[in-house]
Image (cartoon, rainbow over all chains, first blue to last red; front, side, top):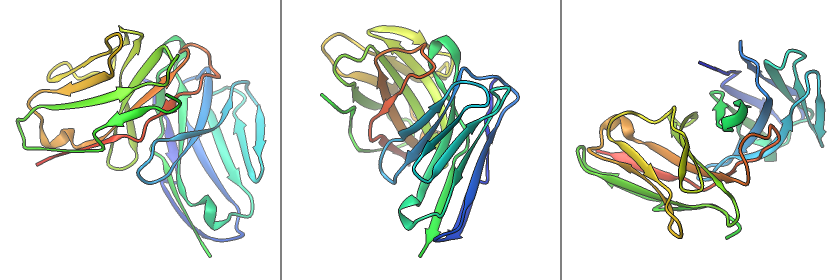
Length: 111
Length: 116
């Protein structure tokens, strides 16, 4: 059974601080995706990383895929109140396309 | 449509009653996925369809849960004889294909099922 362990599950920081969210597994995934979910809505894709060691940047967000394609991290620089929300990592499970989700990280950025 | 539509938004059932949830995928998308979100964050894959055919049902509970995607109709997820632990938000997602690692799934707003 493929599992993704996401940490921390809750993070409360001040505006301007940096943070990193981790997603770890003992399984190899064909890709790792990061989603953001707002209350009352479905998750929305932020980024997909496919190649081992890949780094992608989306403004102040930096996503990295581990060399062995088993783990990933999301780093936010100078967090803003608008970054508040639930961040989910999800492993793409081969040919069937189903997503294996981590437990999620609830981020609260205080002004 | 351009968005995944799910109905109803909220559904309340007494334990033992039937619940039926609906999902209209984005037009042109061949794949539909159902997920269950419990305890606010934990997502669990239930079942997927390729058009009207079951594609992957490895997450589907053996009893009480069934799903269909029929031509020209919204897809449906039905729970017979609901239990308290079925209380969750059920999300439907659609995508144009499944096996591509870059594949993006587009999620609907979810149906919140509360079993009393």
